[in-house]
Image (cartoon, rainbow, N blue to C red):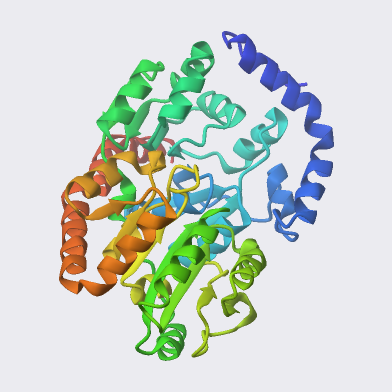
Length: 436
C-alpha cells in the first residue's frame, strides 16, 4: 500500500486508502466498461499506465483532459507548444475523445487514455512519462493525479479553469479538501473573473484570468466529399438543426418540427445527439410522431421525403454547421449546463438555446445581451423563433453578425494563456540544458 502524504485532510486520506484497496478490482471495473462500449478493447493497458510508447527525448508537456470538449479546446494550444519545440503527451478519459485525438491532434503528439486514479498506477504513469510540465484542463481534478503530480519536480498548472456555481456550492461543504488540491497548483488560469474569484474563494493561491480557450478554437473541419454528398441530398430544402442534444430535447425538437411542417412543407430537421448511441431511440420518437427518418450511422442520406435526419456519428458537426442556418444548441433545455455555441457561430448559424447554460454562462450572457443568440424556454417558444428566423433572413443575418462580433471581442485567450505559460516554458528549457 502506498504511503499517504502528510497534511492531507481526512477525505483525501480516505480516498487514497480506498483507491489503493480497490486497485485489485480495477480489471472488473474496466471489463464492465468494455461491455458497455466505454473502453477501447486494444488500449485497455493504458488505464494501468502500461504502454509500448517510449517517452520522447527532451522536455515533455503533459495535458490532462476529461473528454472531447476539453481536448478540442486545447488543440490550438498544443499546436503552438509543438511549434515551440516541445514534445506533448495528451491524456483523456473517453473513447470519443480518443477518436477526436486521432483526427485533430497535431502530428507527433502522443495520446493515451487517462490512468485509473489509484496511487500505484498513477506513480507508474509518472515513472514512465516524467513530464516537465503538467497542464490540467478546465475542471478535471482527479485527486491522486493532482497529489502525485505535485510531489514531482514540475510545475502544475490549471488552464482554461472553470468552476460552476453548482460545483462551488458542493465544494463549500468540503473546503479543506478542495483547498488541499488547489494549493498544489502553481498557477490557475481561469476562463473569466467570475471563475477566478471562485478559485480564490476555494483556496487557489495564484489565479490569473486569461479568458476562454474555446473562443479561439477554429471552425470544425468537414470532409469535402461528405459535405458535397449531404449538400446534394438536402438540395434547396428548408433546414434546421438541433446539435449536442440530450434526452428529452429531441422530443421537443421533433414537436417543433411538427408545428412548423405545414408552414414550411419541405422542412428537414437534423438532430445530432450528444451521445451517438442514442440514435435508434430518436428514430422511435420520430416514428411515434409519424415522421419519416433517416439514420446517418447506417450510411443513409436524407431522401426527398425524410423529415428527421439523425446524425448519430462522431466528428461530423462541421458538416451540419455548414448547412444549417439555425441551430438549437443542446444540453440547455435539458438540465445539463449547455454545450458550446462557438463552432456553429463561426460557421454562420443563428443560435437558439435553453435556460440551462451554466457551463458557458458568460458566453451565452454576452451573446444574448448583444442579440447574437436567443433563449427559448419551451417547445412553443422554440417553434416560434425557428419560424420567425426562417421567414426573416435579414433578422437572422443580424443575429449571426452580432454573434460573430461578440466571439471576436471575447477572444484572445490562446495568446494570454501562452504568455502566462512562457516563464515556465523558459525555465524547463534552462533546466534541461543544465542537466544535458
